Amino acid sequence: MLERIELVKPADIEARSMEIIRQELQGETWPEPEFSIVKRCIHTSADFDYARNLCFSKDAAKIGVEALKRGASIVTDTRMAASGINKKRLAEYGGEVHCFMDAPEVAEEAARKGCTRAAVCMDRAAGLSGELVIAVGNAPTALIRLFELIQEGSIRPVLIIGAPVGFVNVVEAKELIMTAGVPYIVPKGRKGGSNIAAAVCNAMLYQK
Image 1 (cartoon, rainbow, N blue to C red):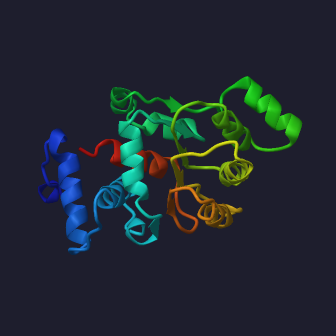
Image 2: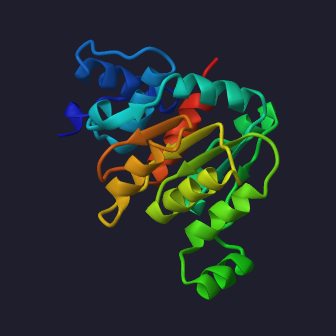
Protein backbone atom coordinates (compact mmCIF):
# COMPACT_ATOMS: atom_id res chain seq x y z
CA MET A 1 0.00 0.00 0.00
CA LEU A 2 2.78 2.45 0.85
CA GLU A 3 4.15 2.39 -2.68
CA ARG A 4 0.86 3.89 -3.91
CA ILE A 5 1.21 6.96 -1.68
CA GLU A 6 2.50 10.06 -3.46
CA LEU A 7 5.37 11.71 -1.61
CA VAL A 8 4.75 15.44 -1.50
CA LYS A 9 6.76 17.97 0.49
CA PRO A 10 4.69 19.87 3.09
CA ALA A 11 5.29 23.17 1.31
CA ASP A 12 3.96 21.69 -1.95
CA ILE A 13 0.78 20.04 -0.65
CA GLU A 14 -1.54 22.99 -1.31
CA ALA A 15 -0.12 23.56 -4.80
CA ARG A 16 -0.54 19.85 -5.59
CA SER A 17 -4.11 19.96 -4.27
CA MET A 18 -4.95 22.93 -6.47
CA GLU A 19 -3.45 21.11 -9.46
CA ILE A 20 -5.70 18.11 -8.79
CA ILE A 21 -8.72 20.40 -8.47
CA ARG A 22 -7.95 22.04 -11.84
CA GLN A 23 -7.57 18.60 -13.43
CA GLU A 24 -10.90 17.38 -12.07
CA LEU A 25 -12.63 20.53 -13.25
CA GLN A 26 -11.61 19.39 -16.74
CA GLY A 27 -10.81 22.81 -18.10
CA GLU A 28 -13.80 24.62 -16.61
CA THR A 29 -12.79 28.07 -15.35
CA TRP A 30 -14.27 31.29 -14.01
CA PRO A 31 -12.99 34.85 -14.29
CA GLU A 32 -10.76 35.89 -11.41
CA PRO A 33 -11.15 36.37 -8.54
CA GLU A 34 -14.19 34.04 -8.70
CA PHE A 35 -12.04 31.11 -9.84
CA SER A 36 -9.76 31.42 -6.81
CA ILE A 37 -12.80 31.40 -4.53
CA VAL A 38 -14.30 28.33 -6.20
CA LYS A 39 -11.00 26.44 -5.98
CA ARG A 40 -10.43 27.33 -2.33
CA CYS A 41 -13.94 26.27 -1.34
CA ILE A 42 -13.37 22.93 -3.06
CA HIS A 43 -9.94 22.67 -1.47
CA THR A 44 -11.23 23.23 2.05
CA SER A 45 -14.18 20.82 1.68
CA ALA A 46 -13.12 18.30 -1.01
CA ASP A 47 -16.61 18.92 -2.39
CA PHE A 48 -16.89 19.72 -6.08
CA ASP A 49 -20.50 20.81 -5.65
CA TYR A 50 -19.07 24.26 -4.94
CA ALA A 51 -18.23 24.48 -8.63
CA ARG A 52 -22.00 24.39 -9.21
CA ASN A 53 -23.62 26.10 -6.27
CA LEU A 54 -21.49 29.19 -5.60
CA CYS A 55 -23.48 32.22 -6.68
CA PHE A 56 -21.84 35.63 -7.16
CA SER A 57 -23.71 38.86 -7.61
CA LYS A 58 -22.25 41.18 -10.24
CA ASP A 59 -18.58 41.96 -9.46
CA ALA A 60 -19.05 40.74 -5.86
CA ALA A 61 -15.66 39.03 -5.61
CA LYS A 62 -13.84 42.01 -7.09
CA ILE A 63 -15.72 44.35 -4.75
CA GLY A 64 -14.71 42.19 -1.79
CA VAL A 65 -11.04 42.06 -2.78
CA GLU A 66 -10.86 45.82 -3.26
CA ALA A 67 -12.63 46.50 0.05
CA LEU A 68 -10.28 44.23 2.00
CA LYS A 69 -7.28 45.90 0.41
CA ARG A 70 -8.69 49.26 1.54
CA GLY A 71 -8.78 47.99 5.12
CA ALA A 72 -12.32 46.65 5.49
CA SER A 73 -12.90 44.45 8.52
CA ILE A 74 -14.69 41.10 8.60
CA VAL A 75 -17.55 40.17 10.93
CA THR A 76 -18.25 36.46 11.38
CA ASP A 77 -20.97 34.57 13.23
CA THR A 78 -18.68 31.82 14.56
CA ARG A 79 -15.36 31.50 16.34
CA MET A 80 -14.49 28.72 13.90
CA ALA A 81 -14.76 31.05 10.91
CA ALA A 82 -12.86 33.77 12.77
CA SER A 83 -10.07 31.29 13.57
CA GLY A 84 -9.84 30.19 9.94
CA ILE A 85 -9.41 33.65 8.43
CA ASN A 86 -5.84 34.77 7.82
CA LYS A 87 -5.80 37.62 10.33
CA LYS A 88 -2.16 38.45 9.66
CA ARG A 89 -2.86 39.14 5.98
CA LEU A 90 -6.00 41.07 6.89
CA ALA A 91 -4.06 43.21 9.38
CA GLU A 92 -1.51 44.05 6.69
CA TYR A 93 -4.34 45.83 4.88
CA GLY A 94 -5.56 47.49 8.07
CA GLY A 95 -8.59 45.30 8.80
CA GLU A 96 -9.50 42.97 11.63
CA VAL A 97 -11.88 40.12 12.37
CA HIS A 98 -14.83 40.64 14.70
CA CYS A 99 -16.88 37.86 16.31
CA PHE A 100 -19.23 38.74 19.16
CA MET A 101 -20.59 35.26 19.90
CA ASP A 102 -18.73 34.79 23.18
CA ALA A 103 -19.61 38.17 24.68
CA PRO A 104 -21.71 37.69 27.87
CA GLU A 105 -23.90 40.67 26.99
CA VAL A 106 -24.75 39.06 23.64
CA ALA A 107 -25.99 35.90 25.35
CA GLU A 108 -27.96 38.00 27.85
CA GLU A 109 -29.59 40.09 25.13
CA ALA A 110 -30.46 37.01 23.08
CA ALA A 111 -32.10 35.39 26.10
CA ARG A 112 -34.02 38.57 26.88
CA LYS A 113 -35.26 38.96 23.30
CA GLY A 114 -35.85 35.25 22.69
CA CYS A 115 -33.62 35.21 19.62
CA THR A 116 -30.29 33.66 18.71
CA ARG A 117 -26.90 35.06 19.68
CA ALA A 118 -26.07 35.16 15.96
CA ALA A 119 -28.90 37.61 15.36
CA VAL A 120 -27.68 39.85 18.19
CA CYS A 121 -24.18 39.70 16.70
CA MET A 122 -25.51 41.39 13.58
CA ASP A 123 -26.86 44.19 15.78
CA ARG A 124 -23.35 44.54 17.20
CA ALA A 125 -21.95 44.65 13.67
CA ALA A 126 -24.26 47.56 12.89
CA GLY A 127 -22.46 49.55 15.57
CA LEU A 128 -19.04 49.19 13.96
CA SER A 129 -17.48 51.92 11.85
CA GLY A 130 -15.69 51.54 8.55
CA GLU A 131 -16.28 49.16 5.68
CA LEU A 132 -17.46 45.68 6.62
CA VAL A 133 -17.54 42.27 4.99
CA ILE A 134 -20.08 40.04 6.76
CA ALA A 135 -19.15 36.34 6.61
CA VAL A 136 -21.90 34.05 7.91
CA GLY A 137 -20.97 30.38 8.11
CA ASN A 138 -23.46 28.87 10.51
CA ALA A 139 -26.65 30.67 11.46
CA PRO A 140 -29.42 31.54 9.02
CA THR A 141 -30.84 33.79 11.77
CA ALA A 142 -27.77 36.00 11.29
CA LEU A 143 -28.66 36.50 7.62
CA ILE A 144 -32.31 37.15 8.43
CA ARG A 145 -31.42 39.80 11.03
CA LEU A 146 -28.82 41.27 8.67
CA PHE A 147 -31.49 41.61 5.99
CA GLU A 148 -33.74 43.46 8.46
CA LEU A 149 -30.93 45.81 9.46
CA ILE A 150 -30.16 46.57 5.81
CA GLN A 151 -33.81 47.35 5.16
CA GLU A 152 -33.85 49.65 8.20
CA GLY A 153 -30.77 51.47 6.94
CA SER A 154 -28.79 50.51 10.06
CA ILE A 155 -25.99 48.74 8.20
CA ARG A 156 -24.63 48.58 4.67
CA PRO A 157 -21.92 45.94 4.27
CA VAL A 158 -19.71 46.13 1.21
CA LEU A 159 -20.14 42.36 0.78
CA ILE A 160 -22.10 39.52 2.37
CA ILE A 161 -20.74 35.98 2.34
CA GLY A 162 -23.89 34.02 3.12
CA ALA A 163 -22.84 30.43 3.80
CA PRO A 164 -24.91 29.01 6.67
CA VAL A 165 -25.24 25.24 6.64
CA GLY A 166 -28.14 23.02 7.65
CA PHE A 167 -31.81 22.32 7.16
CA VAL A 168 -33.96 24.89 8.99
CA ASN A 169 -34.42 28.21 7.15
CA VAL A 170 -30.98 27.90 5.51
CA VAL A 171 -32.16 27.96 1.89
CA GLU A 172 -34.75 30.63 2.64
CA ALA A 173 -32.26 32.89 4.45
CA LYS A 174 -29.80 32.66 1.57
CA GLU A 175 -32.48 33.50 -0.96
CA LEU A 176 -33.58 36.43 1.21
CA ILE A 177 -30.11 37.94 1.46
CA MET A 178 -29.73 37.70 -2.31
CA THR A 179 -32.58 40.23 -2.58
CA ALA A 180 -31.07 42.74 -0.11
CA GLY A 181 -29.43 44.91 -2.76
CA VAL A 182 -25.93 44.29 -1.36
CA PRO A 183 -23.13 42.39 -3.19
CA TYR A 184 -23.11 38.75 -2.12
CA ILE A 185 -21.33 35.43 -2.46
CA VAL A 186 -23.67 32.57 -1.56
CA PRO A 187 -23.45 28.79 -1.92
CA LYS A 188 -27.04 27.98 -2.87
CA GLY A 189 -28.81 25.15 -1.11
CA ARG A 190 -28.09 23.54 2.25
CA LYS A 191 -24.31 23.42 2.01
CA GLY A 192 -21.92 25.90 3.56
CA GLY A 193 -20.25 26.18 6.93
CA SER A 194 -17.67 28.18 8.85
CA ASN A 195 -14.87 26.62 6.83
CA ILE A 196 -16.49 27.81 3.60
CA ALA A 197 -17.04 31.34 4.93
CA ALA A 198 -13.37 31.50 5.96
CA ALA A 199 -12.23 30.00 2.65
CA VAL A 200 -14.02 32.72 0.67
CA CYS A 201 -12.43 35.41 2.84
CA ASN A 202 -8.96 33.90 2.46
CA ALA A 203 -9.30 33.50 -1.29
CA MET A 204 -9.99 37.22 -1.54
CA LEU A 205 -7.18 38.10 0.87
CA TYR A 206 -4.65 36.07 -1.17
CA GLN A 207 -5.39 37.94 -4.38
CA LYS A 208 -2.37 39.89 -5.68
